Image 1 (cartoon, rainbow, N blue to C red):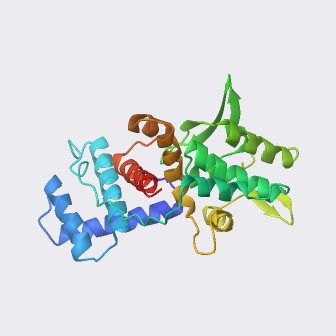
Image 2 (image 1 turned 135 degrees about the vertical axis):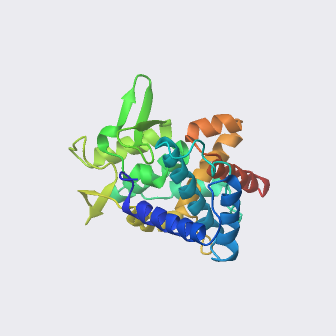
Length: 273
């Protein structure tokens, strides 16, 4: 975890503290049944939310995988133990409404160009928030006939995934970068803007969520969560006739549960229209 963000390390430390507390209070032998009982304990004894339990179980699986790599365990006993599917509140927001909200952004300013490019890249490429926040100018490039954005792989150092950038997202990114004037390859792709002038300061995870909130206002009562744009990317791909395997490959999902949740949410959105 040494290359993970501070917030991630903090959450995982809390998760392992809970695992340690449970192990001390029970007969614990690192078996799948032990982790199933640990999951029940988190729900019933600690009264934690579904999202928190899922996160703690993810931390437990990764910890066990570390123990396997160290030769302490032969197999990962927590590998097959997952949390529960999160509840998804259907707001009755269709893909067309989302694209209209994004298209309404005033792109006559650098700020508008930045926000439009950020949202279009999430919607068209299935990029995660942290991937775009951590991207540099030099990570956006043309590779033969394709336009790609290299994003840092989660939890690894020096490894990248290549996002295929579609025409609309690529045009938005080029327009935004051009509006910044002369830029260096190691400058952040998405930086803060003060008094209409771009700065060489990376936009923070919290900052981008606050900035995009007003951009995703559907109407007076409905505001779309920024995280939900990955779900709407899957909706867009489903409407194009892509299979689950094709969507999983395009969006680079390496674990099953987040992908299953997004696909369930995507189907729920399509079925309500």
